[in-house]
Image (cartoon, helix red, strand yellow):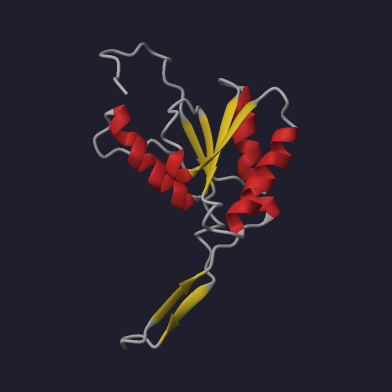
Length: 152
């Protein structure tokens, strides 16, 4: 992909809305046999319908104020319980926003279209996506995401 030499203000409209207190932030897990060759570390990813829908609704509501497009990215082809759950929630929420166009991708193919304007992601995928897109924006070590604290 060849980038233009100069972009006009408003030509790029990209916003990442991510989950920030469920998913990979879950405090469920632990370590066994620490300091031995048999050491085990387990971290559970936990999603609630309320938490996922909160993030997705925020992304869809934001899209209504901007370019009316939301993209969801998961890894449901490999993470077989939580990611399909996110995908299902995305489709359910999208049904209530008929004025918004949508895309769903596996996270590893998300960079192909580079046309997404709103992306709903878990924290882990947010980190991956921003690492991939940051060079496109020519942002030296800056992180273009925002931490949105929502009180429920």
